[in-house]
Amino acid sequence: MYAMSEKAFIQLKPNAKGRVNTGHPWVFANEVAELLPAEHDGDVVECRDRRGRLLGSGIYNSRSQIVWRSLGRGHPILNAELLRERLTTAVKRRDDLGGIKYRRLVWTESDGLPGLVVDQFGDTLVMQLQTLAMDRWKDELANLLIEITGASEVIHRNDGSIRRLEGLEQNVSTHSGGEWAPRWTTIEGFDYWLNLMSGQKTGFYLDQREQHLRIAQQVERLVAEGRKVKMLDTFCNQGAFAMHAARAGAEKVLGLDNAYDAIGQAVKNAERNEVSAVFEGANVFDWFTANREAKWDVIVLDPPPFAKSKKAMAGALRGYKELNMRAMRALEPEGVLATYTCSHHMGDAELRGVLAEAAHDAKRRVQVIEYCHQPADHPVLVTMPESEYLRGYILRVE
Image 1 (cartoon, one colour):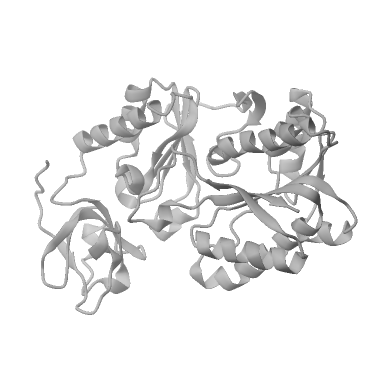
Image 2 (cartoon, one colour):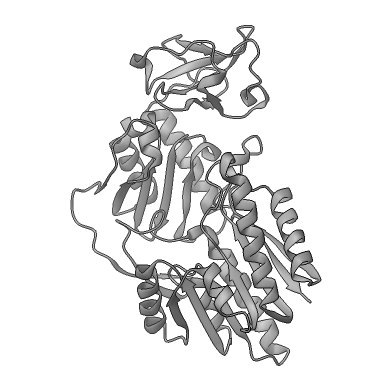
């Protein structure tokens, strides 16, 4: 489709078992026979296997542990034409999902744009640039996104620590150069006070939209069965799960988070939406220990990633197991546990194993009601396990 002007390339080591051979879009520095000079950082270069056969072309950065990220087979050129084509395709695919205006528009390699993340909040887009190559196209990307979507502003949320790994500075700005003031924003029928210039991720956990509704459905079911539902929302952030549960009919709702600014925001959100929910600043592990006698009908566990690397997995597994065991013990018979992990290192097999151990130690019989994963606007690339990071279960605890 595109011709490539330069023939710079990296070649895999003879003994390298790079996943790129089976379609994974990354090559690590320790898989390459010889790194290219830094003058090629941010350029598109070829990747060849140990026999010299072309595997594809992608963006290169010698300063990153991931030195090469695929743009595709053959010889694609990173230019305005390619960016327009792939952005247009990404937006159309989201429109085909229903056209909601609070969604993920671009999800890095899954949309063929490695290092680019774009979330939409109505007429404002929040863009994260996580690779040197994409950072060089910052203004062009913003202009194209405004043209394609009709957005009025693009916020550059380039404050993530991942940028340091690419040798990039961290900063936050608007494409227009003007101010973007925090404001009330309606998502799923609830008003949230959002500051898209700061806060977690791009300003709101859009990847849990569907799960908020699932929890509301579980609360409605229990209420219809005649239960006076008590709901506990742990790691509650802005209180989305809690507010959905309260509006669905839960009589008692408590949200916990150790970030006191998040608790303050959750209180503000609940007051704005006129729902009855209490929020407390607390370490969730310690809270369960101090409140062993408290019983709940619905508990949500939505912690931050315990495993940010493979080396951290052993400790993370212990943490997830302990947390789920405490929650299972705290549930009334036939209670509902919604448990999630947002670490791509935690695969389904590992999560199922953790839940099985937790159920055994809690001495509870646990059934799966529903397996959960990230929504379709966060598409998973089948050759890239890292693109699937959010998974969980809604469980019945007997």
